[in-house]
Length: 203
Length: 388
Image (tube, rainbow over all chains, first blue to last red):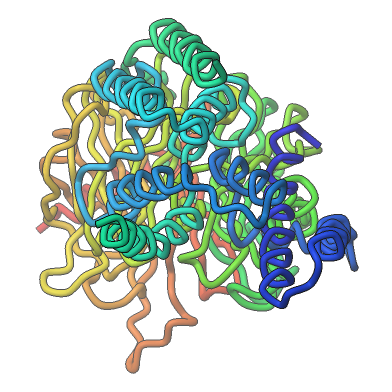
């Protein structure tokens, strides 16, 4: 079993644990008890029944989660009852990037931005240099805004890409995935509502 | 302080990205494989079956020549297409005896599950090639969820001429849950040792791409050959180090013709899709570069009909795919009403080092038919067709 496989299987199991933890907290279960149950679910997801474990099913269904998703899941599991304001920028950027990536990936255009994420010279330097420049811009933006979470997500994604920690050789697969994109789209109205609500409250 | 450290680390990581970018191989030209000399002995034509009813249904054959000149064919078979018991089977043809051996199951769902660490629901099209490392590279489709639109591609390799196969690795080809990439056409090679694998997508859009795969079996780039909702199963004819012709199955309404696109810069860019003069009943095709009377030519196996897969024919082009002439009809069995189970479909062409040409195809969905012939036979057929 490769490291990429371990990360892939652990990622979907972490997602399952996080969903269970969130549900238990909504049901007002004490945090410690909810955490123990989430941990048990995480362990149980690896136990094979007739050759198939839950993590195997989930990985077949969702493929590998991105490094950004793994960072957000770990943060949530560490401090599940804290509102992470810095995550709003991550969701907004993911929602925008997904709009650029996924409709084109389904063949609705001769252009395929996903291909720009391989970061090698096999089709010239323009596209990979543009993507690298975009990553630099985002990192600088996160630094200026003092958004530690956004910077950590970008940094870990780039390092994971360099170390081959996922099966994909495409940087986009490290930065975002469709589940994170869908969750970000769901979060967008909430973020917008909070933004205007806070503005109105402060006036 | 933490932010400053993170930013510094990010800058270092980006420097590493730039370093690996500038050290990656530049664009490569196509690799031209030497074409076997044509077999100009007396006309030779032989028909048999590569599969021997190990399973009720078989489909989608592919084949490669082994080091000892035997021919190894692969296909998928099971109770029916999409059934859980579908596996990849193989068989070997010995040119000395002219006989096939016994069907052998080489890859099944469990093998794929255990090596890709994913739930596998069903298996599909295989495509085999002699890899740049001289091993046998077997790409094949698997589905974890849904129908064929939920497909992904796996790669297993053999370094003992097909006796044993390495654990399969999953190719990551799409950002959208890695869903909906399938194969049918022959891979090509580049001069830098990478592979070009023609693939197609079936979820919502139906379009073709060319995957660039390195010697480790990782996808390192992909180029869109077409877009939209009506092109499938691309095949690639390399006509020079920079030029290639791609032909595709047409999945649409209106004039049903094989689609085509061309490149003049070794695949960096492709021309807009156009219709060829050849009909296509929404069915797979296959091609082969051959030597024809001292010049390079293209040989195409296709269903010569706009409606049904009940005609399987061979066509020849002497002008790099600008025009085609029909050589012969291999199968013709028009059925009224049409019967999908009696089709002749999904052809595969292979030329062995002795110049003989092997045609494989799905025959009535329950056999893989194998026809082996030489060029003299083809020339004879073409001459017969040209006679008034």
